[in-house]
View (spheres, rainbow, N blue to C red):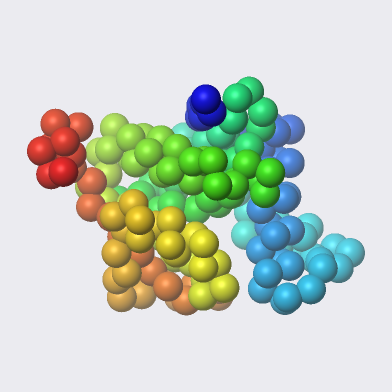
Length: 169
């Protein structure tokens, strides 16, 4: 049986830095439809830093599958809502429930912090991510930002209490 665990960490920790690099390398490859070139991932890291994914401005969670480093997800705190970012599961761990585990963990963290909803933006080429969000109750909404790579925007309303979430099912 597969066991997923999530733990908060700093984006500059070794494991987080490794996963964030892998995440942006994949984003570069998929956007350009070719292997990343020297310096492109470093430029993407500089253009879109993750250093705000720490209290009080955010949160970064690492996911482990059966003890192995397997993925990450971040939240940025906004007034009354949280922005989901950096959702990534390593290829060797995909299809084993990691995306669902990360979403459950960030939703619990957002709810505990008082957020009433989670929003995110994503790209058209990230078909798997869009399907994951839709499966977990995120619905497409009008644009709420003008991000350079934002092509689709999603939102999920969070019940105030876990009892409300159970009743809604």
